[in-house]
Image (spheres, rainbow, N blue to C red):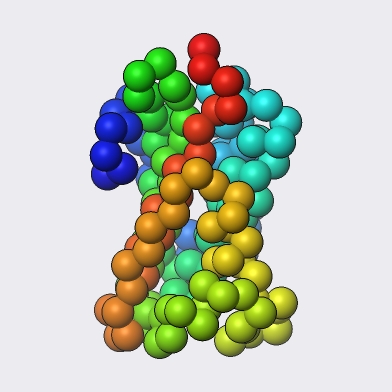
Length: 142
């Protein structure tokens, strides 16, 4: 859990098919709007949710996402965790640099997602899977 951020609700969404990526993306968008995110922050967290859930499906062989509304010192935000038990990321430094793809993409999912959020943490081990946690705060406190 991100230090200082207290979860007020958590949802678990399976990611086992391409349609699940759309469900995670849509739900992240709905939660961001409900938390009072402005248009830029809604787009940022929605894009990160889409990219990271697609990675779980395409590279991790499936898994799940945890979507949490959080608060801290009057701020509200969303914490998203993406968890798979796939092959892990062999060269994390290269993957985070951007432009590295093991599929038919631009390889910007991890690096782009990291730039869109306020906090980004990744744990990965070859053969043991990957967990990515991101946090986005609403830009103006309520």
